[in-house]
Length: 71
Image 1 (cartoon, rainbow, N blue to C red):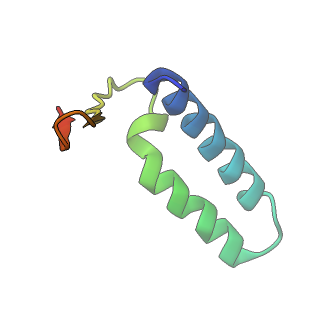
Image 2: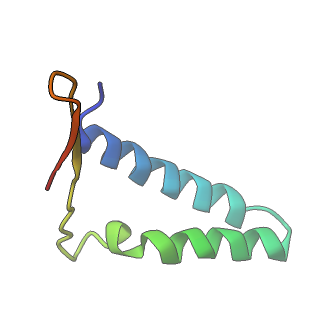
């Protein structure tokens, strides 16, 4: 199972790659799509600003039949 840090790194790398790909196309709509991704991920992409990540971990307590979500 991937760790939270690995998942965040993968998502960060994907977003940069996707933005670059979309913005390099000769189609205004694709450039707008790339900018939309940039806006969505701007907090993660700003290396000068510290980001805080809240992670919810799902735990299944099969013995008691109770689903527990830890924060």
